[in-house]
Image (tube, rainbow, N blue to C red; front, side, top):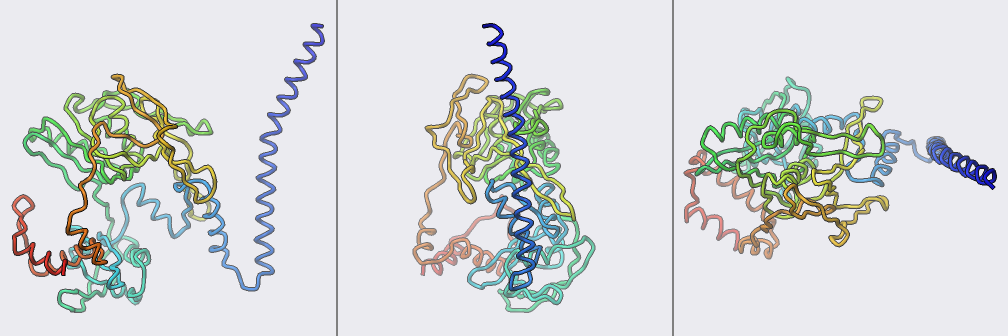
Length: 449
């Protein structure tokens, strides 16, 4: 009897090991099979299709379609697009230092915001200037991406930009030299009545040092509490988020953990240096556009009871991507893991498992309860729920009238600002600037009428 049992157990073990061995082999065979099919499909198309194929376009479409079946964050960057990935990671690019936008009513690309002390502003470009041509290339019928790509280039290269200023109707030529530009990730910080304020737009390379420097300066100016504004911050570098948390959390504390399919994707992030201040009262402002690294920051501060989170529920991106170099100077960004904040929860709010274009928000009824360091209840699966929910103001009457009249409120405001700049070459400092009754009437009456 014992002998039979031993033989049966050995047989079961052998069957299990054979099954385990077959699974990866089956997977590898299926991968090779499907790639072989794809290769034959393309070869036959290239040989037989009535028109000559553009391999870059055809294969690029196939790659992008494949990645779209996974999640929105796994992306392929062709050789000419790799600069977009670098800008995303570093916040740096070579160009003129201005935001451009499409003016729908004019059907033209215009200068939206020339940044101070950067090539566009130094050359004399102003908000509202209509871009007509760049060197010998006409821009009058082009989209924003096309115009933007022509404004960028190698640092030190010079080009001629032709524009029309709508306030005067004058055609103007600007000779502009591109240079390395770094977008301001922290547009403002300041203190009033002992309350410090830091606005952070993105988690790009080096931003933690800037935030740390700003916070130290706020303390010197007498700040005794802090508002950390992450509204509209779509995230960025996970390490920068950890280093920012280190400003207010003790050294050696685990603040986020990545868990993926392969061992190399698993990683714990701990604070690495001594903090600046672990006691100052803090409020973190969030909204529905607070995502990724912003949610790591706000979620860790909530889980560790270091700050009060105020605003509306955050976006819910709990996935981590890494950049990968591919042949021929191409790249891809791949989702390799989910991140878990100190309470142990993952705040990923969307399920992408059912194929291309499918997106399902995890219902609150399926979320699980976790606890902060002091025992407060928090939940996973739906972004960061603020400790104090503060919804945005209701739509003002003027915006309702604009909508009812069929006008785009942002475009109306844009046109008004362009006109105001033309009439007021200089204005008072922000702390002293006020809109007069005449200014209000000048805006209000034409808008409503």
